[in-house]
Image: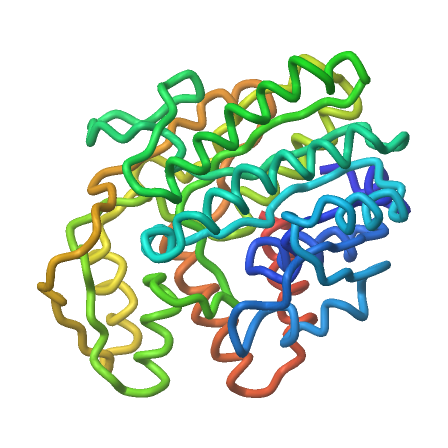
Length: 350
């Protein structure tokens, strides 16, 4: 990445109070960008946004719902952004079974609202629309999914993200391309890292079990996912935004940012690897009937490697170690903004 590109550049981030949104907002602030955030209140306590005191490092933090087009448009117009990074979402598969209407409204219509607000602004040059690896119609294939594979989804979350991809493509073709605004969609794997306290996620559940000394209950020990540290896809998003502004339409398309081939591992492997250093954690197979979730999911990132020069820098083992390291620092009462920046510096130095 080019730090000169980001210095004093106005960036509008939706979902900045979330896990990935918090990490990218702090990274952008460290790079010298003027970061404007728009998001709901943090959904968990504690949370990355509060523990890093992120608001103090931002140009402005607005609490609002992306389903509220008028409020969203007002915040975006006031920010006068050059780059929009859309991360706000209902991000959980199991929650989508409980709240399907809210999931579709947030992930589909909310995305449309962000794109509509951006096209009405005079300053926007590039939009990075963050979806998910689960937007692909999962066939339980052994091969990794590529950007031109079919979209779809069994559960409401995955389906809503596939719909958001289709809506974004329509906006690109119908409005944004003729307005000179470059839109790309990005699909990452299962991201891990310090500061994620969400429910129904493996690493946060493990860390809670570690802290409380309760038994960790695992739903799908054999499910394979493309695990990666949160900094890996975020570096791809930032690099892509630079190219969208500099080179335009050639990069305004879909991109995968996944881990290396051998970092797609079963859930049980992740738990056992963590238990090597934290042996007091016990886990068991939950065994009760569960809603449908993909069993095998991998991403092909050859396009990003070839055309963007992007590649993952940290192994899965390093990603797990850095996640636990961040959590331990938090338990010790360290400055979590400084700890996060230290990990960003370590990552960029690889």
